[in-house]
Image 1 (cartoon, rainbow, N blue to C red):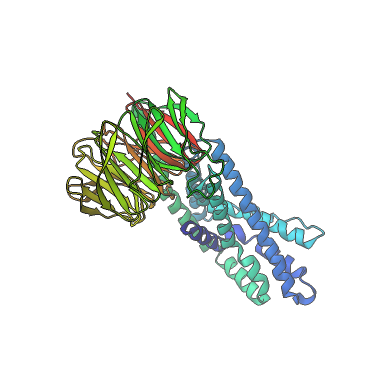
Image 2: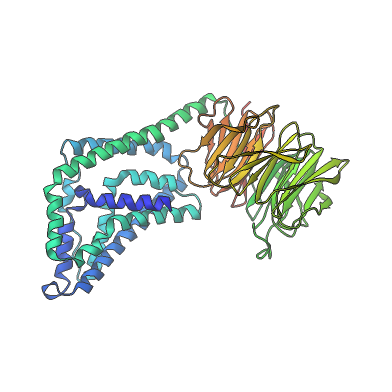
Length: 531
């Protein structure tokens, strides 16, 4: 909603930017008056014609959004190439306008074609107003790319954004024809009398936007490019495609990469859905673990044993693709499962508000302790197995002493629910959390304080997943269709960003060689860690 309000506001500023709109307003008003009937009595028809002009504007906005979507989808990493050029043009145009030069002066002679049908003519006016205003609002193009476009959801966001912008500068096309001619003339007269001032003010605004854009968008991209060159090269690995539903969970077991997912609902629409767990190795599918009747949301492994939890309310224990146990400690959907680093403890968290701790010995699972935790989303052990962290829908993280079975601390700072948690797998390591607020946080659990708040440029979607590499050097998060990786050497900016996914990334997992990421389209990508 905030982006749409911003777009509507930008559209309203375009009304005052007379260098774009003023040349067309007199002709437009004259056209509407000339087709409204004798002595301009037919206000209803004038309003109808104005609405058709606005429809033309909105149609052009949809066309522009679709073109940007296709360009962004066809050209990976297009932003780093286009941003310097676009912001450079914005600054140049601002300088010219401050000097009093009107870069769009030649547009003043442009007229919409006069067709025999006045309604078609009104529509053509609207089609022309859109592209003739966009050059004055070049930063809008930047925003459109930031909102852009890999999956259908983002495409819809981009179209809505452009429609809000079109409504912002197009509403006078409906209102002006309905007011008195005297008011119309005063409006056009005021814009004409203040032509020079408005041009220079617009120039100052464009320079400001261009400079801020360079500092916040272009420079970080350049710095990130330098970092990527310095970091030993990550390599793009195989793409694994066999799932027909979103991949909600990944984990690396001794035998390979284990993946699972489903339709992500309570079973109302599970007819014919793909609920099978898959095992991958060397870039290929090894086997499929069948038998589940609903979606899996979480996976964990202690080496050769894999635990899975999902919508059927049971924790399933697998070994070599065979289910060796089903744990019945919960009554509703399992949202998270995690083994301790030593493999002797299993924690399971459910929508029923309980966290169950199980001791593990010789593949036997004994329910040891129950913790009360409503609104749980995620959980993880520290490397020593002494602490358990749980993420919550109340925007907090709860820290538990495993031996005492007691909550010892509540960590606050996120402004939306916590999506995932992960302890750095080193002694005394940092705790990472990701949230629907679009940020990741690193915590010192001894003090309960945030050490770093990690932000991603242009990130508006929730961050869905977080994972540390086994040596604790790399931290990966999944936001939108991107996988962003930081090095522990420098949390001030990402070390590398992967944009190859075409759908929202939902899950992550590391081993010593690979980072795996699974998305909403059922695609799993592998990235080889640098030496």
